[in-house]
Image 1 (tube, one colour):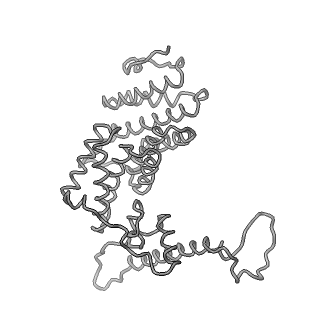
Image 2 (tube, rainbow, N blue to C red):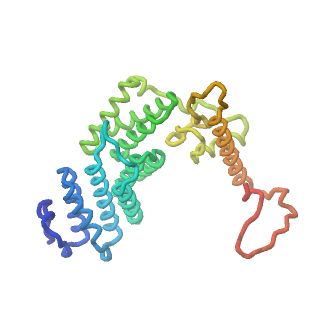
Length: 337
């Protein structure tokens, strides 16, 4: 029977070659988790360095996933211990710790997806979402949290972090209507997470604090009141309705709500620039450029829809002689669209 090492015993030992992959991973996890809870950087660093130096040749894919997951936790812990944040503190979006955390979470995901361990995959996806949210990539973060919940519905940490992420997203929006809807959803998720299982006590307090901030801003009754997000028209013609449903299902509208809501309310390109103060005789340069960018995107989006919706050859392709280059290339109006 393998020896179980305490945190203190693991800190004074360097050779763990006698341990099985499972027991080695337990040692790494104990060093990282206990080191972080004690705020001892040396403990976390030892766990990360031991994991880095370990050959995984005799690890099956599951324990590789676990090891990379623990290493990611270690890098995340080092980020928080080395770079504390707060109201008067700043941190760099580019750091070795964050980079390594994301790298190892992605490695863990590659191996974990080959197994049917829903809990481990949900943990990895949730932490990957947290890391993306940390560096301001809100949309990717939402995607990973939703993936975690698709695999393990009711996973408290994913629900709570989704709520927290939507709150962070809302803070960078200038449209108050959109900001309210973001916070309405965020409040629902945060409330659910504070009452759910598998939520760390520190996280539970954090979720409750953010929920209170939202409630103080908008009022509890407004946040829990019903809102019909589907009382909107998708158009009159069959082709327009089909087009807008395709945009909705693929998240292609220029609309912040498009990033987490699938409802008819989202079916328009409402995202725009905020008001910009300019000189009396200055032309509206930024809005003019944005209009052009937006129109080019909307046009390209419809051309893509046309291309994948049309099943018949277009008459303009008739008589267009092409040389068969034997490389399986396909030429047509639709592929160009």
